[in-house]
Length: 292
Image 1 (cartoon, one colour):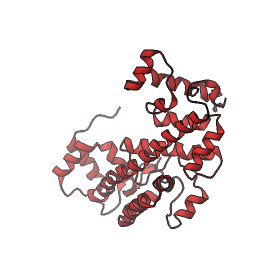
Image 2: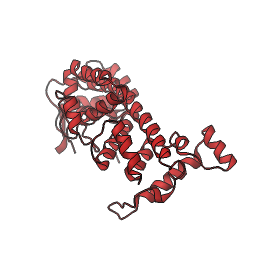
Image 3: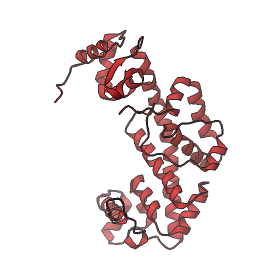
Image 4: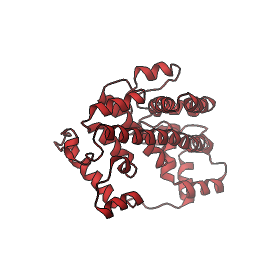
C-alpha cells in the first residue's frame, strides 16, 4: 500500500518530476482544498507519457498550466447542469403526461409495461428496473408519496417521476412498451430517429449530468457514454467541431435538446461563446485523451 503523503511531500514529488511551483504556500492550500488525486487528472496533458508510466512534466510546465483548465471546468459544469436540468425536468413531465394519456398512469410499476430485454449476463433488465422503482417509492419522503402510502392508494406516474432518479426514468424510457407515447415524447424534443437511438441520447444526458454533479474532470475527458449525433444536430450546429468520445460530443446533443425546449439558440450560444473565448480550454473539451 502507498503511504500517505503530507502536503509538502506532494509538492516535492511534483517538483521532482519537473513541475515549476512558483508559490509553495498557495499550492499547499490548493492541494488541501482540492485533493491531489483530483488534480492529477489535469496533470496528464502536461506529462511526457503517463500512459506508459513516464509522469515527468514536459519542460517549462508550471502549476498555472493545469490550474487554468481546472478552474474553467468549475465554470463550465454549472452551465452544463443548467441545461441537463432543463432536459431532465422536461423529459420527466412529458413522459409522465403522455404515458398517463395513453392509459398507463398506474401501470408504470408493472413488469409487463416493459420489454423483456436481457443484458450480456442474461439478466432481464425490466426486473431490476421494477425493483429500483419500488425501492425509491418505498424510501421516498415526499409529502405526496407519503400521502398515497398512508391511504393505501397507488401512486400515479406524474407523482412517481418526481421522486425517481433521472437514471431510473431513462431506463423506463429505454424499456417501455408504449411506443406511441415514446414516439410522441421524442418528437416533442425534436429527436427524429428510432426509439433505441433516442433513448441512448437521453441516457448520455444522464451520464453527463452525473459527471458534473460529482465535479468530475471534463477537460480532455474520454467519455464512457456518448450520445448518437443525429443529422438534425449536425445541421443545427455545423461549425461546432468535436472528436469522438469527447465531452463536446455530448454537448452538441445537449445544445440541441435545450434549444428545442427553449425554442431558441440562447443556451447553445452561451456555451459555444464560452468555449470559443477560452480557446485552449475549448480544445480540451473537443478532444479526449486516453492515458490508461
